[in-house]
Image (cartoon, rainbow, N blue to C red; front, side, top):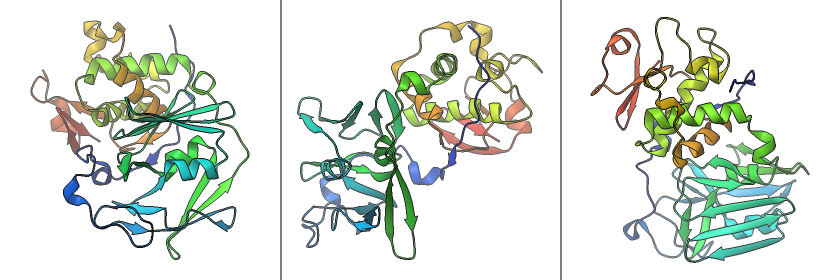
Length: 294
């Protein structure tokens, strides 16, 4: 199988410290008394935020900033966006929202939402507050094809309806790109956290965008300039079926989520057979067992 020429990936740089995967569901010790404004037990330090949709103020006292991320209650936002139905599965702690041809799944404690087979990373976890799911606004708005802008001066999240319908996974993802990206992520980092797997995917896509490397995912993975670039190619493990988590990580990367636009190399220093990377490239950060370099 060969890869078609990759489209240019628009990736938003995200500050590493803001999205540490060590962040987990809020513990009871973090909760404060019921908010006088919204009626929810928000975590300590949470702050209400103003929100508008097409110039009209909405979700008064319901939108809130938690750890620098704006959260909204799933049901209220979905109804505002014109959802046809909202259901809840208590066994899996998952809400399912339907609007026309779009189906959105949101699970308590997860770091992503699924919309028509596409995966949108939330950076911070989906929260259950007073038995209501709260979701970071940007990925949820993206699922509903609603544009989001932030006005820091007035502390206002401005939403704008586009009238568009989200493209399905089948029509959005290039099948060859997904095939190879999920396999290299799995072969290199299936045992790592989702965050760590995303970082490995970012290295591949950063190389695609760099003039120093081939301009396709397939070309980057099988690049032999200066020697084989990825050990799974030499060992043959690149051809194994990918882990489910690695397919998810690949889709998140292909959606444009980037931990860093600068990382071009990574290595596991405990098993690496060469220290060329650590001696010749600037160290960026460590995630799990991997060190990442620019």
